[in-house]
Amino acid sequence: MANYRAQICAAIIISFSAALGLCSSAWGQSSAQSDSAELIRALQDRGKTRSFSPGGTRNESDRTEKRKKVIEALRRREKTRGLSVDERPYADERPSLAVTDEQDFSKEYTDAKEDRPFAEIVIYFDYNSAVIRSRSRPDLASLGRALMSRQLRDKTFVVEGHTDAKGGDDYNQMLSERRALAVKRYLVDYLGVPDNLLTIIGRGETELKLPNQPYDAQNRRVQVINFGRVADAD
Image 1 (cartoon, helix red, strand yellow):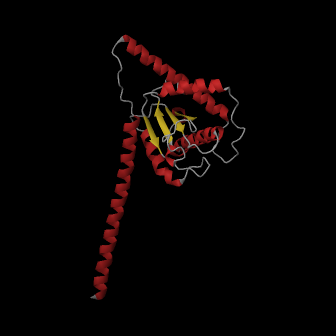
Image 2 (cartoon, rainbow, N blue to C red):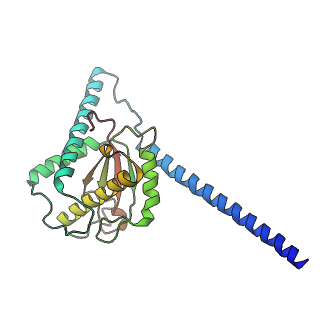
Image 3 (cartoon, rainbow, N blue to C red):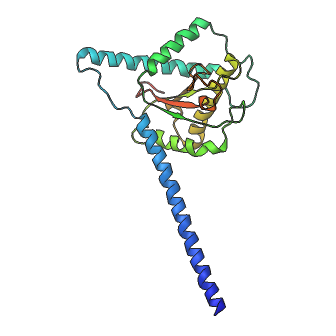
């Protein structure tokens, strides 16, 4: 009798554990789908029409052309930067560019991304490194699913890296570029996002999320910006 009761109790425990496992799995899938859906909503172009006049159409065409030129410039920069996500020293690896050229491009980029849909994601990296920590993989998986969704898969995106204010300007600039590249490479290599739909830029410490708390961890983040359907994206 005792053995029979033990068998019944064991069966109940196994069934209950299995049910919990199924619930946990279903919750995990539901949570991941919810995260992806939220990212899709954030990144989706609402197609706002600023004007119904011919002039408004021309202005929108001009804005698209500006975004296209910025994307082309970012791709050229990415190829010539010699960036990698490994642990080589950062010093003296950044090409020497005139300050005015950097300032001019920064302004062009800022103008091009104005009013574009974006999502902000906290990605955890090893200290002073571009190596992504494992705890960020679920968030990157959600982002990958969003970028491959029907609503977004034909758009071009900029992965924008940010740092806090610790360290020098040049160091933070290079670190932010490497971290942006690490996110791009993860999306492409592990999640199947087409390489030609992503490009990167580093913003260093120039756009702190919390300007009054320049060393706060929330400043260390990645933004993904929808630049729309950019022609000749090859």
